[in-house]
Image (cartoon, rainbow, N blue to C red; front, side, top):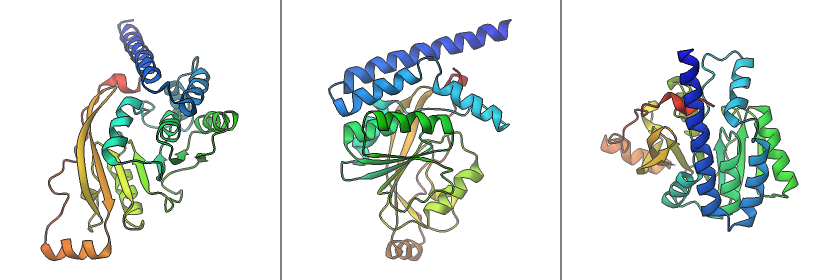
Length: 258
C-alpha cells in the first residue's frame, strides 16, 4: 500500500509538471500558428494516454529490461538549446528518438526548419504522422525506424536526448556518426561523443546547462571534424574533448513515471 501511494504521488507530481509546462509552452509559443494548432491537436491525442504510458506498453511488449526509459525535452529548454546552437530555418534537423513528436513540431513550427523524426515506437510515429497530415505540415518527415540503422547523411544538425542509453549503444552511435560528412553538428544531452571513440572524429564547440523535468543536464554541441582537422589534432597529440565531462547526471525516479 505504501508503494502504491508513492507511485501515485510521483504520478501526480509528473501530471502537475506536465500541465504547468504545457501552459508555459502555450504562453510562449501560442503566437506561432504553424506550431500552436499542431501542438494542440497532438496534445489532445495524448490527453487520456500519455507518452509515458505509450512507451511503457511498448517496452513491456518487447520485454525490455527497463520499461521506464522515456523522457522529453521541455520546449522552453529546447528553445535555449536551439538559440545557443544556432538552429535556423536553413537547417535539416534529425531528431533521434523523436518520441511523442512535440520537439519536431516545435522545430518546424517555431524555427521553420526541415525535420526528420526517427522513432521506433509505432504509436508515436502514427500520431505524429496523422498530426502532420491533418495540419498539412510539409516540413516533417516521420520515419518509424531504428536510429541505429536509419540513414543520417542528409542532416545538417542531429539532436539526441538519450541520457538513459547504455554505454555500448552510445559507442555504436558515435561510431556511426564518425562516418558522417565533415561539418555536421551533433547536439547531445548529458555526454559528449568523442570519449566513446578510439579515433578522433568530433570537436566540442560549446557546452551549457539546461533544465529538464528531473533536474539540470549538460548539453554538448559537437561538430564532425574534417580530415585536415583530425590530422592537426593527432599531430598536436591533444584531444579537444578532454576537458568535457561525459558523466550522465543522476536522475530522479519521477523522470519516467506517468
